Image 1 (spheres, helix red, strand yellow):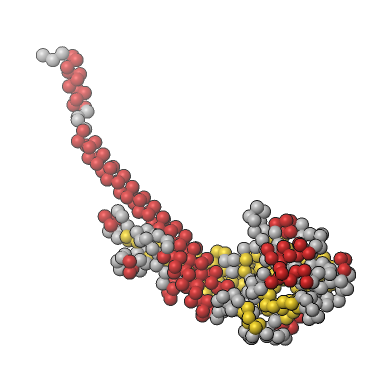
Image 2 (cartoon, rainbow, N blue to C red):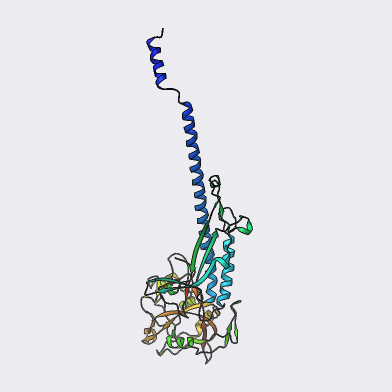
Length: 394
């Protein structure tokens, strides 16, 4: 006969039968779900990483290509639009090939299919930058790096769809992805030097009157010297690009020959020589608030009188090299009291100079100018526009 304790124990067992088998089945089902969710998360992460790699590669390729577009811009470009595109495509492919994405060590760029060129212009009416494709000269490129083509994923098909790691278990074999970037050279409205970077801005402290510059753009000038873009050499002879004399010129103000003080009240020869050879430095621009810009109205720069042959050696060191010069529209005062009104800067290169004897001159021709110190501006693009270095464009 069972004791009262044994009877109570048997009653509890009848009410709560063993559940070990049911819990095991439930745990197995939950484990499968956790593994599936983990696999799904891994594939999503893999896709996100690959897309980020494609975008990084397209950024780099577009920036590299835009550098080559510089040679196709300006009054006297050294390359035709088609030649600039050829160089840009080559640069983009080279840079893309150095970038890994997903399961391939080198990113493929099909330039016939996945690059396009055009112009990026500021539109005052719409108050925004406007992209217009297939219009030369080009200052804009778009690069689309793909992983969306059918087929395998060997070296010859590195733009094939991205094979997934775990998704094939549920019937999803791969994913199509892409990275699209645009890069542009923006028109400049001045120069600036960020503090502490040690940069200089290649601006000649010599100004030219607007009438002479306008005539030059209209086809009035000589063509006695030739610039070779391949070597940077300047020789006697015609190259199809007109020239004018920059300095010394009769500005209409006694004691002035077009030299200007930038960032200093000391009109010494040594300051001019330094700025001609090495450009304006952070200290020079510091006296102008860190920048010289013309989009908020003309600048006014003081004249620097009475200097001629002393800057010959400095000018000789920059023959053939692109520089910015200020263009003036008005001049008041004489000697050290002269003031030049400067509405814009333009790109030039020195072709020839003689500052001794009776026929002194510094001969220049228009040149395309692009630098990291150029301030991008919301301004129309013209034949004498100067440019920033390439920047990513939205």
